[in-house]
Length: 143
Image (cartoon, rainbow, N blue to C red; front, side, top):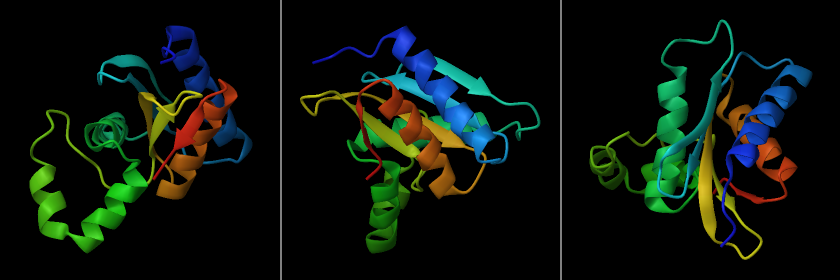
């Protein structure tokens, strides 16, 4: 399994924010977690809502917790709302079942971490996370 390094995580944050600025998205919070759910890198842009970093964290943490991107968790919430509602109370840092929580996979497909982004539409949040992951040569899995 390839390790997610601090250098990878910092580049993921920079590239995610770079895409957001190029596309004139709202200010974002970006969180990068390793496969254990430990925080490796994070940034919150100026004028971003004070709770957005917690939403970004919940997107990334929930994706790791379930082993699927948060977009897939959103589909699960529609199909099995009672299950996802109950599930949201289990992980210590929450679970946000909307796009923007993207698993980071190495070349072999192993999960090495996750990125959570919040601040714009969920689809734009996911696009920013994906851009960061791809920039470090890893595979993005948003669900």
